[in-house]
Image 1 (cartoon, rainbow, N blue to C red):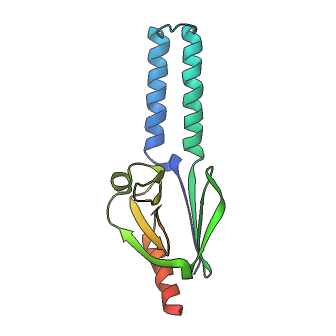
Image 2 (spheres, helix red, strand yellow):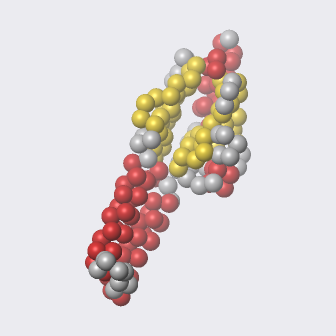
Length: 160
């Protein structure tokens, strides 16, 4: 069984809210004027804020998570931070379990996170969460179809 999944951060509710707030703040700044700061004109300060907001928005729109499960193991990548596939053979995987909590509440938000417990979390546009425990570490994925991931894990376990 081969399972491929791709999730993008731009499919979540967060990106339209971010751009809506940015548009509202820009409109208010243009209508009422921006407070002058020493060394900057109001136009220069507005341009700097818009440029930084554009970079953050571009980063959010370009973030995605790609998951692949096949007969050899599981692999994932999350551009623009992890551009090459991180591959783990099935022999390295100790356990895969579905977490019943919402990814936003339990994971600290959307995107890529590093937990204080030493666990990487790749949380994107869904509320289904799967924890993959390896021999020496673990990580968490958000997924649209946790049943397929668990089926692939069980299928590999029955073949051993």
